[in-house]
Length: 307
Image (cartoon, rainbow, N blue to C red; front, side, top):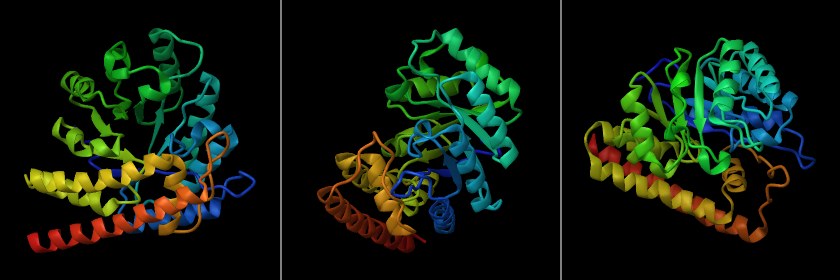
């Protein structure tokens, strides 16, 4: 089901630009997000994995949400990830995000202590009850050790405040089962390399690290899929995956900042302990960027001929 906040929109999982001292560069953040929107990005997802959210302080995460809402200026919705180690901190971040004007909040399950599923449900429910905003469950089991699609979260998925699941998992069977039981939810694809397969099982949008880098390709893939041109959509997915593969080879989060800087302003390195890029990595990404521009050009030519 398509809802007003998520729709079938293509959200960037925005990085968080930083100065050399690891403080947040809010000027670069504003410039980057404005550039993303002008190039066609349809929504902003901040302080998630790509945004190094769990490495940011409570105050920093609130400030990022405020900057994002200001930069968006009502043009696209902003979703803020507010997941935290403690329930109280998550509630405070979520409340401040609401005050900043975000359209929705999102959360990963709590980490480290091996919480039971009822513990996690209670954690989510406490935030949902405390902050009256649309809520997106963030399923990223390779980082959290918990796959929401494997069951135990029916109480949450049935809540009217819960509008969707950001599914960053290769378990498309589990995602399809969520949709079959809860057709009112939006399933939002989180692995960019799975955008076309996710659409085939009913996903209605994407929140991804490379969406802003190759928004032209994501928009084209969606158009081709909607038109029933599956061969054409697959050809674009292959091009998207070429960029994803090149980024993964050198470290996806640092790569996203480096390549994103080519479309706006320099975005700095990741916060330690995430690694910084070396000269060899940057050289490899220069080649990835050149191939990406070629992919964008050929896709535009194909789309123009199809009109």
